[in-house]
Image (cartoon, rainbow, N blue to C red):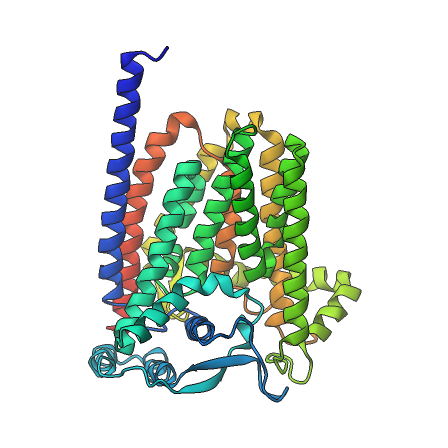
Length: 461
């Protein structure tokens, strides 16, 4: 029998959660509008390619093509988007503080032409298009309501952030995001990507959603809604692993749940999801034409075949890369936040502040009895984190490095955010420190947004 006191506590808890959710939404809306004011379009790495892929999806390009097998794979985009991109390329390449405002006024008079042109974007061809849905929806609405290109860009950014916010809220409802994972999601680099209309921020949020869903299913093995959640787990794992090759280990979550629960539905989910991802990966590798962007005349599939046959060479190249102090330092700095096209750094104090913050949160929670009670899950998730990092180097060795290579090129700190989120869930946090973690996270959120605003304002204005 439920007592009156228990009912009152439950009611108060619901009110508190609603208040936290409301404050979170207000903070996100305010922060987004404040940062967007100093963030010119296309100032996030690969933003041009990602937005072009989204507009190509609006035009019906579920997968990318190469018209004559000589041009890099791509699709048709509106000519006005290409003009928009070309104009803002001047902002990226120059340090003229008058340019952003000048272009903002100019681009408000640029409307969609209704005419298409082919645009190559082979570096996005391997990503399953479902991850571009929010951006493609934004472009569709921009065309439907005849919005100017600049307003459409802001709409696309807003829809992307709304999707991210919804995913984070649902992740929290399924299983509270642990303090160690939360601080990773609140780093300036994470915040910058959340506010950019690319798939980076979206995949960060999807990773947190997947992890919370996984933890929820582990905790409630016989829950009546577990079948629906299992399907949702498989869909999310598919979206992530088909849009980021280094996230293939996430396909093993349903298999792990099958081992733990003996429920065959998890095994079937694992098999079907894995086959779909393998099919998409094989299809994209066979159909994408990239002219060997970083190794002219040699297709990526040929580079991949070489390294599969010579695995020791791969490990030697990776070791040669990570054993360099300057390289590791650049990873750490860009992990915390080197914004723009790696030309908008934070202040020196900010790097020390956020670095010590992460270190403190992780160390406090590593020495926790909670870890000892869930040893198998902790080891599993830690191994997944290491596997994702290793595959990140392997993917960029094939896609972004010269051939033959002596080191892996193209690795940036933001590529370690998802594996660190996974590691954050492995560590979890001490229940008695939950309130303190939330307070510290709130402080870090404010500091991150301020740091992002300051870095962008200094670089572009």
